[in-house]
Length: 294
Length: 234
Image (tube, rainbow over all chains, first blue to last red):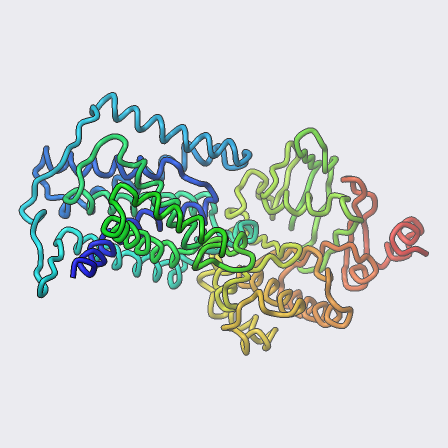
């Protein structure tokens, strides 16, 4: 029974990983930039959520929509003033830029907010639903449900709406997108905004489960990178299921081996996947560069 | 309708276009000719706003367009069908066409234009759910032209129509182009294939090393001794 219990909490937590990874993947697939500051966006989202809680007494679930909007705008601003000017520069410049942003934000948080762990108190944070002998944590269930819901909405948005198609078109064939009258810069802003908004939601959902501190992003960004490569770069489907898989692996390794070894375990799996199927489990297949996003 | 005046374009320190001037008249098929690296692509990318010119002026119906961004130029009605098709390969034909009609100017006539391109290329309607990347070269070129037409162009620039296609397919596409022109759309053919282009074009402009080397009526140009020697091997 413990194993089933573990599987459930693993999958539920995996939903959060999925959200963060889908955001990272969207930015990677469309803007073609590896956003090393993605974890810090999560940190900021959690602090904002905390701020709404302490100053206005807003429950993290209630303020989630506000956090999403804040992060969307933050993403748009990052793209406009930081990424856009360096888009035509070599890859190393972009890496240093986002890595630098990551370090700057972390230290800014350390300076201004101290390294203390801050958390919110909600009535439901320790609540569980009992199904037979299984106990399912309500905040984790909510986080998972929201992650699945958002993944479906995002998928439909990208596949069915004209704007979604334009985002995919930019990812697939930038020059033709220009020539068809798509405002590519605006699509970049939108993709970065949505990618950051997803992190905003993840942060809001995490707040009742975790406490926030300046370096919390670092552990999540590592997971997100593993998930994106595991699932296949550019594959939204892969990012979603990759997140669940990593959640599972992490929970299982805690039970079977030792919780301290969880990162080692998923990196072993990660390396194995890279050896056997370097393009990721749900890879976009041939011409992944061209597909960009799926 | 479209006028280039003393256009200069640089890539870094390399000058690609030198005082280029020519004018395309409305309602005709014009040809922009030249060997590889003569500056044809630079010229049309300057027209489409993908490359910014350093001096000179490009106007469409006397309206300056060279400071506009690519999507604004599309709204003005200049559409480029790029070399090598550049389709959205992992999308079905129909979605490629929808994206062709992305601009505001195109959205209002979406249904009419879709009917027009499907009547022009019936095979595309039969295969509308098929991925663009899975089509044959000729069909891909049809999708590329159809996608361009969906944008409701005043001027349709077609870069290397014949590239990689069997002559018989090219013949058919040329007939289609004449049909397109007859609906009132001006066409600029950008080609290395001089003979074929001169056969259907009214006016032609020949580029050499980024400069206008020859221009004039196509039927006169075809007998020009320099052109014959340089491009037709006669």
